Length: 323
Image (cartoon, rainbow, N blue to C red):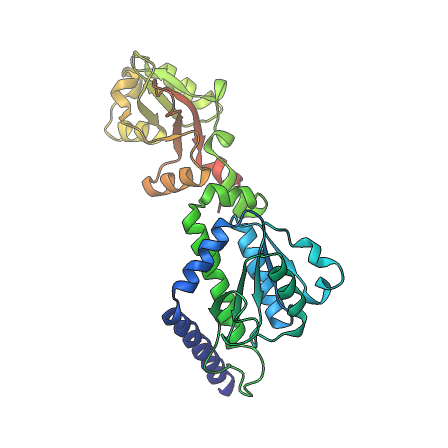
């Protein structure tokens, strides 16, 4: 079982390295977040080797959570790509040693133009460490048994990048709706972008009756409407005061009572669950599962009347692949 033991050792070393960073967080981290929040341009992330790979991920995370960011390859920067750095931008440079030769042209460029720079390095006294806001990514040991391959150090750098991005997200009040705007594709996008109004049935597909309508009329509607098996009951002001489902009919029959002799108000369940048309479709699915119901009548809470404007069925949500 040497493989399992080695894996456990690696994970423990890397986990401890992250915990060590937690204890080292200081005013520099807050200053870095403040600078990035105040940045009116882009966050340019630069690094080479493993630091570059981690930098690409940090840049991607920043961009997807509301902070425009680009990755600049240091080796290309001296061949024209320095032009991507604008006067309103900010540079996040990553180098474990703080002396990476390929980063020096970027360092000199931002110094000449007075562009803010945040540095992730393990050496505060290095050339890079002295150049801007210093974020400590040092580790006591690499998880590599040879002590050579960047393992703990790259893990710490990525985790600290995530901490920056999530702190900025929190400060800016970046929410689920904002996240959805940047992730419209795939199942995640469907869950976050789709609203109840995008899936609900309206107009002729809306099964509504009056409270004093006889059950013969109600049953006809429940078996012929676009959404079957449910009817919303309206009071004299056309507000939803109840609903009737197939379950209400079964429970009436179990009591040996003929439902056709009643009016809608005699069978309806009062105070039915509703949902606003602008809520996320995922919220409707949550409500249905929580209360074990198949349908939700939809209202427009922006309207004072609170009249039902639609109905949504569990199958509508499942077809939208919200799970």
